[in-house]
Image (cartoon, rainbow, N blue to C red; front, side, top):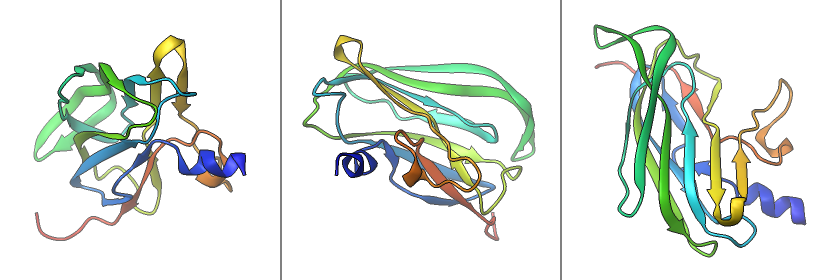
Length: 164
């Protein structure tokens, strides 16, 4: 039953579905530390096709936004957008192994993303004494998240909804 515990104790997204062409609030749930040590850093990699990233500050944590060029330019409400936040890092906090917290950011899911696919946000959770949990594994074709020891949090992309 050791493997089963890992599957239920990974960093995950609170909302598991979102339509392309809309704003999405990604809430990353961090349920524990690393081997009994407190979490001190949470790093979220922003996948291609996700732009206009605005992380939510957390009291007691420093917030860093690593910016860079996107693989291509995207249309963001009529404005061509070719660069932005590629990684968000919360650091300097102290989330005990027996505590739970959430780290949130608001993003725009571009219409270049494909409905029906799962979009993964790799997360590295760093803890005291140099320990880390790397939630970065993405299922290969024919695999599911349940087949992976350290699955990256994912959101299932839905068809764009009507209206604005």
